[in-house]
Length: 132
Image (cartoon, rainbow, N blue to C red):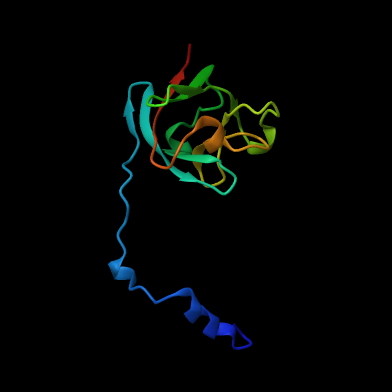
């Protein structure tokens, strides 16, 4: 930009008025007792699934004896947990982790969780934690 390359921005397309943009409503996660109904709100370039559940909503996620995320429509379940992506198992199995954006995420270390599980953006999930 400093060398006058700003003209290349015109090649990207026409300018859009920010007021014309519409926010997509994905819905907030809803708690029903021990269960939270939520959605997949983002799939990153590596295939990690980011849920709409903020980590603050489940502060004891890694201290509870059991926690799982199910994908009711797909009949799939993830119940392994790791505090960080790098601590994920190297067995190709998906696991729940705390995403750097502050949300509950699902990943496959050295793999693609979206492809492994067959999950797309907007997919409904159910998070269930148990202290038993």
